[in-house]
Amino acid sequence: MDVLKEMADRRQIDDLLYRYAHALDGRDWNLLRTCFTDDAVADFLELGGVNEGADVIVAFVSGALSGLDASQHIISTTLATVEGDSAQSTCYLQAQHVFKGAEGGDHYLVGGHYVDRLVRTADGWRIAHRTLHATWMEGNASVFAAAAERLKASAA
Image (cartoon, rainbow, N blue to C red; front, top):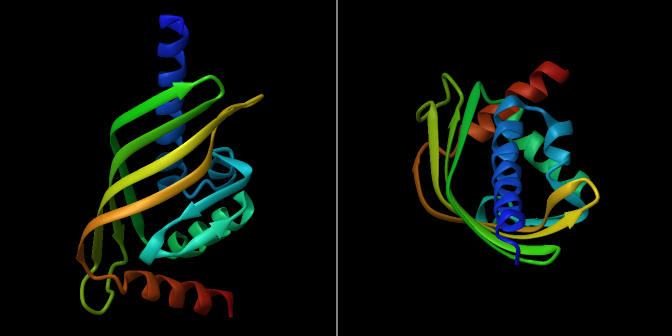
């Protein structure tokens, strides 16, 4: 493979992974949609199960995060193996979720890594399959329930 092309692919893949984190924390669901192929699958394992289709993935994630006061998803230590128009990647993550005043504490922190299958599209690299491997969790997981209650109350 041409070294410059490989470097460009790796940089574009890094940008894709970082764009995902920025979309989550900025609550930019349109930007998040650009991270996935139409038929993408996201397996959040015990933290959210399997979601099939980009629109379903975005709906799941927006439902989980929208009511929070803040979140911060940090992506690092990316590795990618590119073979033509497909790639395998992995990256570490730490995801902080905050809901002020939640019973049991305001913070929930998840650490782990994503394993992705990526494809090159006419619009650039996209996630076709993502699996979240949470290796540790700390804090109050009920911040999500508190956030969901806030959303429910504001919709009523």
